Image 1: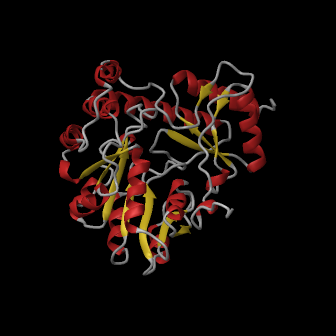
Image 2 (image 1 turned 90 degrees about the horizontal axis):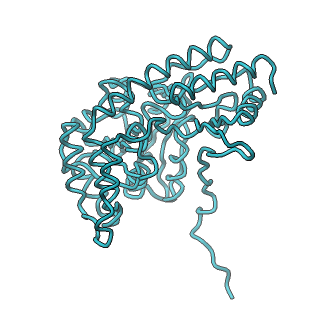
Image 3 (image 1 turned 30 degrees about the vertical axis):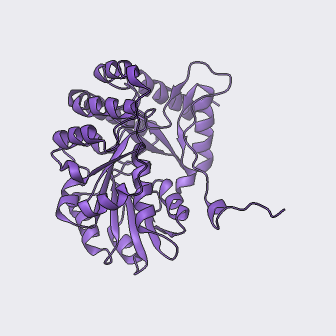
Amino acid sequence: MPRIKPQPGILDIELYVGGSSSVEGVSDVVKLSSNENPFGSSDVVKQTHAKTGHALHRYPNTDHASLRAAIAEVHKLDAERIICGVGSDEVLQFVTQAYAGVGDEVVYTEHGFSMYPILARMVGATPVKVAERERIVDVDAILAACTKKTKIVFIANPANPTGTMIGTAEVARLADGLPEGAILVHDGAYTEYVEGHDGGAALVESRDNVVMTRTFSKIYGLGGLRVGWGYAPKEIIDVLNRLRQPFNLSTVQLTVAEAAVRDQAWVEKCRSENTRLRAWLAEALAELGVPSDTSTANFILARFADQEEAEACDDYLKSQGIIVRRVAGYGLPNCLRITVGDEAGCRRVAHAIGQFKDGAR
């Protein structure tokens, strides 16, 4: 009997590795590996979630009209140019499926989100990795790497796992310099952590080659619910909706996400606390000889002398019940990405790194 084989290239796709959530033999664990909101979701969201179980036998709305309207109202956008997905990952996948394929190139930066090359390979396209400049997206390097084969350019801004960010003028220069027919995908998963930042929405409205993606998994505290959205020219949204499963989001996802986006007081509170604690954590680690770039997200990228020290510190933190993220897979072997936790979590990780620096193992 002939052997069953997948389509060419599928087995070349590397599996995504998420952040750890437990330590064997340790019960009192603080998880700082997945950039989750340590304060969770708001009380309004929790109450809404508790009330959504009365009609689970009914199919959800297929056009997501109410959620799209809420997003549009809060962010002053056009609801007809919004698409919702199972996390922003699904929206990124829609774009890649629709606009890249065999023989095409998908450009991303060397420390960019690891899903970008995975998405490229899923559709048979060639991922093209471009160098950054001191862990910051380099627009000139990206433009130099683009060719007639380039169909999509991915940037995360703020970036993950570095936390760095480029300004709107630089993003606009990138969009304007792309080859004809190429799309800039501006991944704004951490947008809400930057006061006054629109995540690239204005660029979408002024250009026909920019797609913005956003998520409810970070500041809204809904990582376990999996809801994201995208904003793009109407012509692109029409294409993406043809790839979207009609019932890709459940009634629970839609209803709870709508409550979350309307509770902007919670967003402001979480942003304020994150800003305060991020600065405190970065300064505390710097005093211990562990520097980091200025972060605009809900994590810092702690830099150690070399990979050996970074991994030894990670091992020690695990022994203390603290889970952070190794990022050697992102081309940063001497670094650890540390989510900004609540105050107790931040003090705990700073104390443990201090012990490590003093020789504890």
